[in-house]
Amino acid sequence: MAGPKDLDPSSSPRALLGAELRHARERMGLSQDQLGQRLFVSGSFIGQLEAGTRRMQPDIARMLDEVLETGGFFARNCMAAAKSRYQEHFAEVAESETRATAIRQYAPLLIPGLLQTSAYARAVNHAYDPTTPEETIEEWVDNRMARARLLDHPTKPLLWAVLDEAALRRETGGRAVMAEALRHVAGLARRGRVIVQVLPLSAGAHTAMEGALKLMDFEDAPPLVYLEGVRTGRLEDDPATVTQLRFVFDLLVASALSQAKSLALVEALAEDYAHEAHP
Image (cartoon, rainbow, N blue to C red; front, side, top):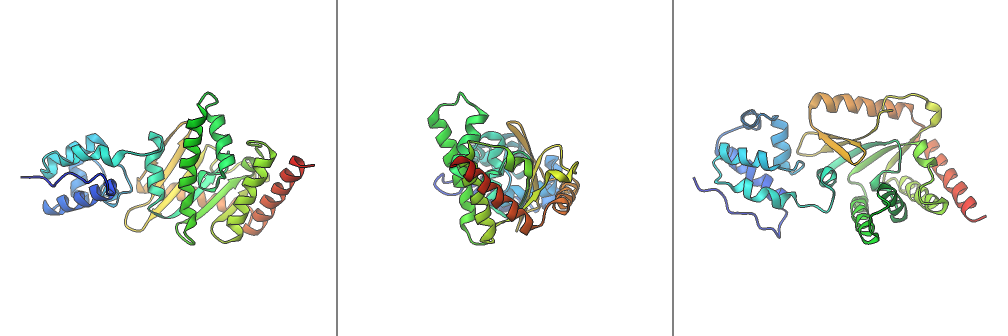
């Protein structure tokens, strides 16, 4: 049976790949669960591939071609859909952010990427790898600022960030950089564009002491959670895992300062940094 034509690289490869997958699956009379069983993955994973919220890996593409009789279409085109400006472990997350209707994030050690200024992002990337050439650092900063343009839309996606007080007090890039960074966060919160809460040091031990997490909800696909480590990370779509980590986030919100008190703390720290940077 002849497969569909190759994807036009000038279009949105992942969206087209997902649309072709849905078409091929329905042509074979298979539900998402049934196709998932044949590939030893969940039906929700198939749904995420079709919605474009998950990246199609070469091994999955080869199995899809075999099961759906698509003549090597998915194997030929999955690499085009996988191209990204971001590092391998984060590329899928960045692309999922663009399709999310809501993002809930706990950041224990730094201001998260979507809330960063370019100066703060530059300092973070220099710290990640001090031997990286300056032009590479600037490319990384540009990519991070491109991600942050998600917030140019007045309402979508919802971004709810719980920031650890330690991240706000960790001087990154100098006091002037921190003053600008915290004023930026406060400005987004004052405009109602993001919900920001601070988990104070006085909260003591809490449910997410082992690391950062990011929950993403989608209109036409199951939710995802991203767990991040040092130069690594993984996406999870297992419903039980997502439910458990959503409860973790809810507990963090309950332990955090109110929005009003959080905003007051962020602005007070920004003023402290600004005053000490310019005595």
